[in-house]
Length: 334
Image 1 (tube, rainbow, N blue to C red):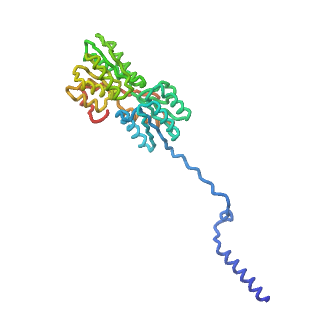
Image 2: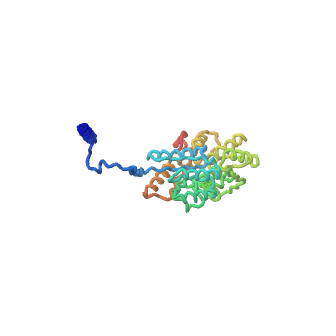
Image 3: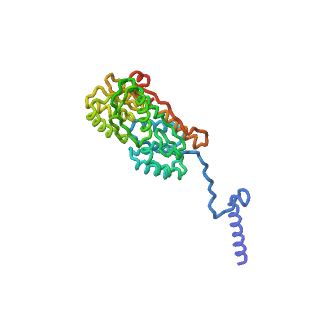
């Protein structure tokens, strides 16, 4: 019995020795310590990625499509993200969409306001969220909210149209205006145009001015009514090229040959009309949405990176007419 107990004890010692030998010892006791606490997470490093928003006036307008594309090209080339919303000329929708983009975490917004006054609550929300505002193309009324503005000299754009009209109609005449008071860029263009014709030796009379809300269909209807009421009108000044296309359509339908039409933008559609020998489009004060967009994008990136940038940039405008349209081509924007 005693021998059996001794054998059992001997076997237990062998087992203990074997189990101890199976443990892989690496380093110090601290290296092999077992803890019930979860391992500490290493914080992720900031990767410097920015998210930008774009809110244009109407993304069916070729001008804003081109402007957005130019901005997107620069932003995505730098590895950043651009979110685009289309308010379709609705101030209410624009405010809702801007608030959505705030919730989506944008760092800066490229903004073309549908209504330069109604946009103020959205500007306030952007500032409260510490989001940079790059105002593009058409100014907001409360410019104190804006971190930078990039656009054309819109007063000059209207002025060169007025100067051209004086040359074409030295005896003066009746003028109609298709405008959009909620868009300050168009307001400035009409102001510049009226300043120019006021300097004419012979008088020009503005017989009609219609708020088109910047929409093609409203402009078309307005132009038709103008031509019915004033068949002897000499010129129609339009706040942008989209409105000028509407006026041209109305003139064609009415088969009026004597009226001349002015637009602002320098769009491919208008340049194609300028190539026609019998077209009623006299000229367009050309902007460059490509240059404006790229400049705005570079400004925004510099702003977020804490680099120097200009707070106000006006891009040059110039007249395109039948005499020089070949220089700029008709297949794209300048």
